[in-house]
Length: 496
Ligand code: GLY
Ligand code: MN
Ligand code: MN
Image 1 (spheres, helix red, strand yellow):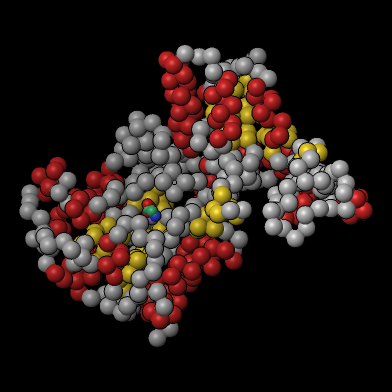
Image 2: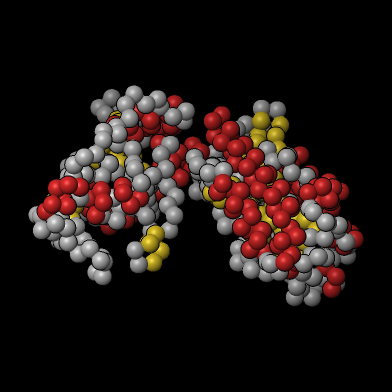
């Protein structure tokens, strides 16, 4: 047996650990020697930077200006075990993707402070697998198992930032005691190293330092509130792909009737995957009373004529920008009178909400506009007792509306959640912000406060809206919204 491929012996940072009951428990000297030779040079030279590189450089500069003299650590995150030796699909941490354009696992961006107040950016990444020590084929994370990675030089060219081997990062962090902040919760080892660097601080100083990390995340969320041109284009790609997925679902409705909501979920996912994308959150395919459960992702119920199908789904691009769109449609192709009445009120509320999206308007305006329309309708139907101002003041309509009318959208479906309230929740809309407008009405199957005919009816209409210089643009206008247009859409696409 060769020294390099003997179980348990470390060689250049790689330890060969055969699976306990794996069929190959050792590697002969001859095979080890042979496997280390005979490989072509596949290094790609003179690569052009990705389109996003100029934007990530500007984003890093903005972050650098906010934290002069401090070291900033922004991890990508690690693979998470699903079971035994299988992992969940990896999704890079949002702030890391925003600042680097990279979506691979295990890396980390470090902004190291310079004397002049600026920072040097270094992106620590997994290098290519070593071909001498067997790691590339004997380690479960070697490239012959998981696929070729960019070399550090290739990544530097593509991403427009200096790169280094991530295995040197713990040492590099420990070697310098400069004040350090980390975006927490993505990489336990790096979190622990930053704690170590603060080990001689007293309790009070440590409590303060936790706040320092939190402020880094808050600042990044603040920076991400207004999307740059490139981000808006990515979001439009996500929305356009989502529109195609919704069209596919309508075409597949007859098969869903023969099976279950899973057919809807699968049809949407197929569209996302064949175009190289993913979904930005668990698809909600909710038929009949399941539509009254806001985040119904079990998707195991039947899809029946006479019911409404609520589909809330969004494609996430390879660059990790996601859409978030909902349509509610009659499975038979035609709304019943009651379904249409509920749908049309939600639609009117959405129209009022969309009209309230404009630069300079408070973020809360579109929510209030939608809620007022819904409350007025509920009073008119005799489900709530007026006057409307009292209903709204006490929030009584929320028994049936349940959730807020929308949220910021971007790399995260509920984007910039931790940003400062004065610039987000209580701030004004600015050109470049993207948000959802998604009023809904939900009458629970067991709600005795409404006549029986309402029970089990759930309607949400959700669109993605860009704040422009002079108003708004509905990015998801490729899908019909008004009840008559939804029926026409179904009539056109659904085979009968
Ligand atoms: N899809 C979750 C939401 O609409 O917020
Ligand atoms: Mn939403
Ligand atoms: Mn949604």
